[in-house]
Length: 269
Image (cartoon, rainbow, N blue to C red; front, top):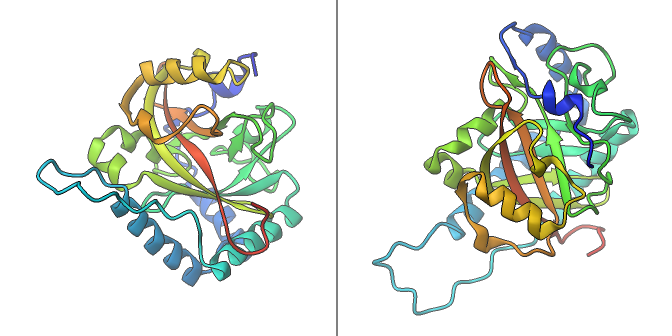
């Protein structure tokens, strides 16, 4: 992942032209492949509980007792439902690799991957033209997230869709309240524990997935306005969500977390 693609130069652009009607049509067409309402509600509740578990301890609180470890399981039914949802999606749309969901935001989309970083800039999940494009994984990344560094792109739409909500994470209170996301795939579910909100030029070295992880992390943290470097290790796998920061210019806002494989259902550990 050493080459700078048009996705970094153009992807994430803040569109001043409204594409809402076409987006609404495409969203409606996705209904058979989205998670059931009760599953999403349960996942939302679990997320709230996890966020509360990982909230910073206030100085006046008693910390003499060790904290319970953060939950790394989901109810079997929930896990199975998420995987089945992803299976339906990937069966219908071969370029789809899973479903990306960040509770409390509008980030709730199929995650695509093309043969380059150009196609899904302006195409919907079904391959039809759409100015808003899709949220997609860099084509040079392994689609099962076996790479240590994984970068996803999405436009910053004026109607708040796609990856527009990434810029909201620059507020500490918002970051703390929405620091957990989910990635459902056909064979497993990942929890995403966000730990960094960075600002970078569109051709910065943090987009180079071939860098040594330690060097990449050091660069990421040097660009971060918010970071919690104590919640991951260098052996983890990471996912970054990148979008344009403003209506003009080269600055990108990049939300990064590490992936936690969730136990449950028929998935392998």
